[in-house]
Length: 177
Image (cartoon, rainbow, N blue to C red; front, side):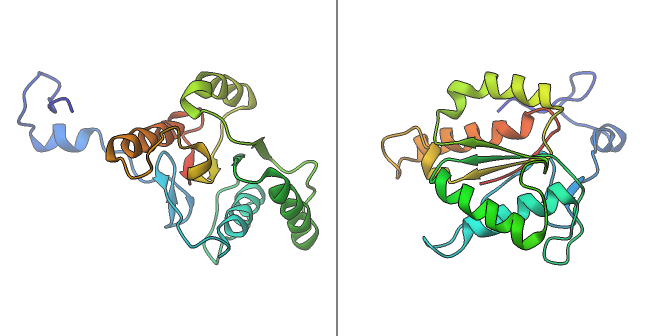
């Protein structure tokens, strides 16, 4: 990483220079998920990660509380990489249970796995055209892993950086993987 420097190129910053660039936290889910940050949700297979992520998408898009935490109303992009047909079925059921219109809610989907860095520029253009995203959900990390060795620190580090780049999309989304 580059060495930190102040406005005059100095390495040692005075207090004003140090706090001058502070950006207050901007939560999409109050006290839980900040904009422009990457989060990872982990659990065993079949323990409800997709259900939680779909609920999170619906609550953010409708501005309803998520587990008693206030949410900001926002546009969501859901990467349905692992099993798009299952996600479609769950989404339709969730719309019925929670009373939102699956045809008009401000949640967008990209079905099936793809190379995130390879399509990043296209995603960025389409995101900007839509007016930006407040949240991006990646379901699941493994579906988008471009390496060939899941235990390689180098490959996993590259994958994490690829996912973290999604926080730079228009709207400064909170990214949950």
